[in-house]
Each structure stands twice: as structure tokens, then as C-alpha cells.
Length: 120
Image (cartoon, rainbow, N blue to C red; front, top):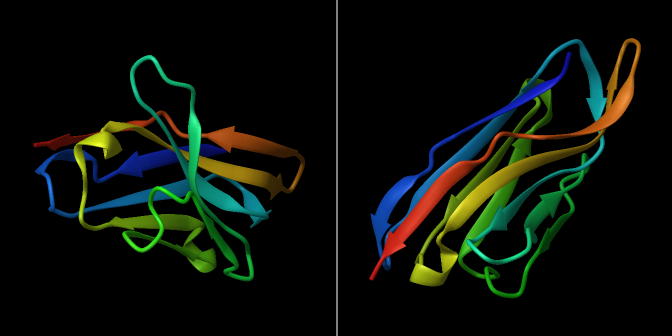
């Protein structure tokens, strides 16, 4: 069974930094794209950043120049470096893995979410 486990959330002051990580576990053969989404109270879940196996990246306009996504394919892990954080970055951040192939299955998976709170 595939699981995504996030870590690294917390409370930080505006202008500060946080690093998130998400490790996929299970009998994984390969993962297509991985990414981060976020959901603030009262809002829909929105894309933050994605990265393909070939390390092609895509960012939401609101985080361009402040956040960096990366991945370690050998460890099935995706990272999100967040810099110059703003109060509007406050949300639950979810890890996402697209087209995860195991020896017997293929599917998309979400992590349980990690809270990021930026105080003003």
C-alpha cells in the first residue's frame, strides 16, 4: 500500500522560511509527477508547485520566486523550500503523487496534510 507522509510544517513569522518534505512509501516502481497543494480555511485546494520525473517544474504565480520544489527520485521524496513567507501562505499543505506505479497497481495519492502558519 502506498503512503505519502509529510513533515516540516509549523509556525513562522512573516518573512521567515520553512522546508517541507514528503516521502512516498510502499512497493513503488515509479512516480510520474509529484507536487504540493494547499488549502486555507474557506478556500478550495489550490496548486502550489509540481515537479516531473525529469525535474520540470511548475509554480503558482503567488509563490514564484519564493518557493522551490525539488525531488529525489531514488528516495521517492519531494521537497518544498518556502522563503519570504507571507500570512497569506497560511494553509494546510498537501503532498500529491501522480501515477504511482507499484508492482501491482497504479494510482494517484495524497498525503495527510501539514499545517503551515505564518504570523504577521
